Amino acid sequence: MPAMSFRRLLTFTLRQCPPLSSRHVILPSLYHRLLSSSSAAARNPPDSFRTRTPLEKQFETWIHKLKPGFGPPDVDEALKAQSDPDLALDIFRWTAQQRNYKHSHSTYLTMIKILIDGRRYRHAETLLEEVVAGACEISVPLYDSIIRFCCGRKMLFNRAFDVYKKMLNSESCKPTLETYALLLNSLLRRFNNKTVCYVYLRSVRSLSKQMNASGVIPDTFVLNMIIKAYSKCLEVDEALQVFREMGLYGCEPNAYTYGYIAKGLCEKGSVGQGLGFYKEMRGKGLVPSSSTFMVVICSLALERRYEDASDVVFDMLSNSISPDLLTYKTLLEGLCRDGKGEEAFDLLENFRSRDRAMNERTYKTLLFMFWVPGIVAVQKYDHVPEVPPTSVGV
Image (cartoon, rainbow, N blue to C red; front, side, top):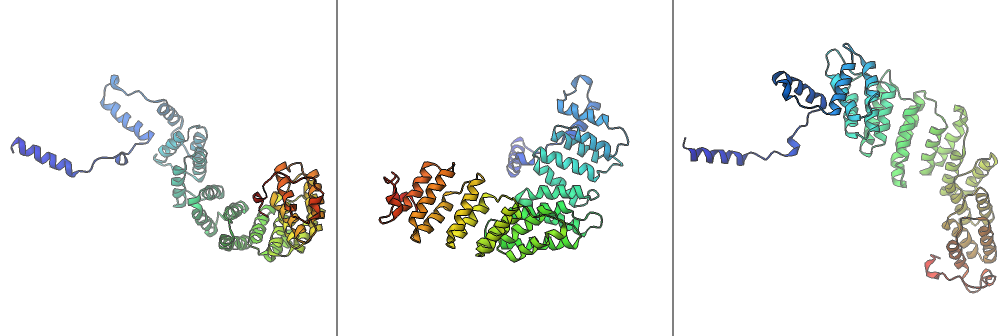
């Protein structure tokens, strides 16, 4: 063939081949590089040996420490001794390739924890899929660790329930109280609005029923999460039922228990019943959260129960918790609308003297609610504060 024709044929062939990108380059793992260097050492003279990196030397040192016939406990100990997650993963993969050796649930658990702590999430997901596919025997600590990891990753939320169902169907690895706590906590973090709440509430109900059917005895933390889910969806009757059953499990209601129920009752419109739970909680010496305080205050003010609302505000301040601007405005505006401007002004002055967190701007903003001709409260004040009335949404 003439030289010119061969050159044209070669040029045409190269144009038809796609360029080689970085995605096509497969980087071998550490132990593969060592194996290839060992085979090259047999072919090349000693003066051409490649200098090994410190990581490769460290890897080779740990490989030599594993005695012939090593088992999962030896590998588990070697993995825990590593500070570098990549080196630990190389040791994990190298040992898996050895004859007559198979990783156990303990080595998988150790390796997954090392990868998660080292933020090697992609590698952790790979090992997760291997475990679910049956790479080792199952165990409760391993599966709980996988569920915890999946619950913390948005894209793996559904995978957590796949692992849970596998535990539910197994004979030797039934879900424990920690398993249910992880799943319930993950569901509650998604209770952002009422529509989403009702979607996930079905899962909460299902988990609660399966927990009871499995004979798992809940603690106060788990029962509080169930009560919180019902209260957020305003299913207060079911929340109260769980509250009454707490004694059967030997659990004592705490401030969170009362707070969730009090807020749920007030938000549903049963303000008197919600106030009753608030008083029962205070009678036991339990201090509500700031959100519980403010929901009770606003609900009472909207029901025109100003005296009860004021008492809750003073109780809140006595516990060194300050209401926000909206809570103050809800109470004081209600009094003004009902023609009790003077009482509202006296309350404001009283609140100011007790609330150390109330700054001057908050005080002036609240004071502008009385900047209406004919209100007695304004006549007690010498001058109008220099804050534009348009800045206050009254």
